[in-house]
Length: 393
Image (cartoon, rainbow, N blue to C red):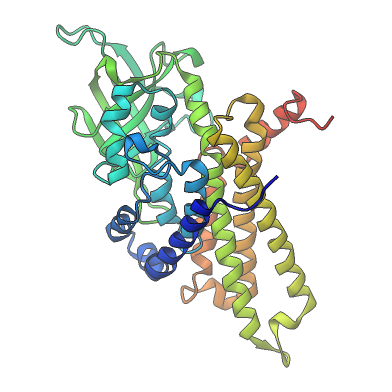
């Protein structure tokens, strides 16, 4: 059993760490304040060949896999979860295409992600169907228009889509059966292009944190989708779950990096801040709090890297879900605890915009909600134990 990274992944970590320190860190506060999309960081990621980490070389990527992307996101998230989200969006919408897409779909839509010529977003949630995926109402009906036979017409609204404004194409899930029925077998994935008639961006959300990458609505008004843009099979609900399962370590990496950044910043502060004739770091109570979060960070890293390794092996089916969910649950809840501790260690100063701690605190909470809430993860872990997918003899 080896815990060292391969030379290639170790080099990737060092190069992304430098980029994060030199280019992401100085921009983090301004991105949060203005809420403007950081096109300069997207260009920096493009020049550093970070947009195709999860894509195989034959599709223009580097073949670093989910573990490579996880490592890159961990480094970037130490300073900006917005920038980390930009990297995450190279995998979330492309995942279903990689898992079940046709060769033609892969050749048409994925190389542009690696080069930065194309961007994509992922449409699953709806106003009445967040964690309750089966409650979605977006409908796909067969297109009977002459010349369009075999295609589909999509109507509905997707919400809380990260990168919705910047995307050139979307992975969208819709029901090919009665949308009022809770029928998993009718949920199907489609590739929808931004410039097609009937596709528009609705309202964008005013967010508590992770500003700079728009989150908002995608409105589909009788959008014609050709048959060749169905991802996998009609009725491929399982594809949505497989895609999300494989994403668990990538979201976990955002929490892991945020926790590391918050703890490092707060530790340096308490080593310099004097109180009662000592530095704050001299007090045993403070030391213990720092130590507990440090232990959790290392535990989260082991869970996250193992989950990324599993996903790269294609092990994101039911029997592996508990391990993937553990990583997402532990790392994102840790981000909340670590950022809260950082604010507390800085005291009143930590609550002010003079320090990044309050930004980390706001950004962290999002991670326990997106791509499966902490409660959903706990349910999946418990189901694994009850079903003996996670067992110890």
